[in-house]
Image (cartoon, rainbow, N blue to C red; front, side, top):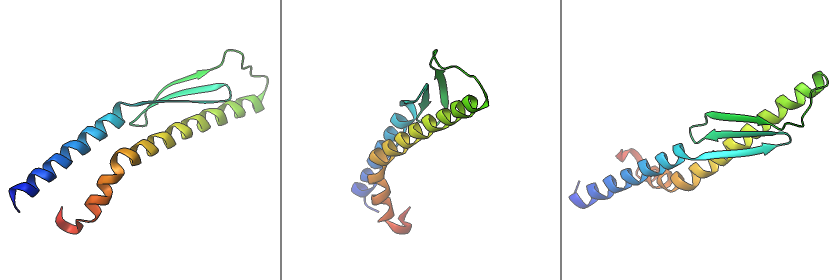
Length: 102
């Protein structure tokens, strides 16, 4: 392997690591109904906020609250996946083309 190729691979590795760190440090906030969730790029739920005017009057309201939490988390996770594809997708294409080189 020549030095130029090694330098290109090392540069690509550094860029991938920087992109991965950017994703991990990103914060995603999504609101669904009366629920707002905050999730990190590592898919760790950091906060769940329920609007103060949301009232629980029975089991259906609790079920709806649970559904809103799940929906807001899933929306945040989709944003994480989208950012991951935007930041790292090009490297996947490049590495896939190198076959068993790595």
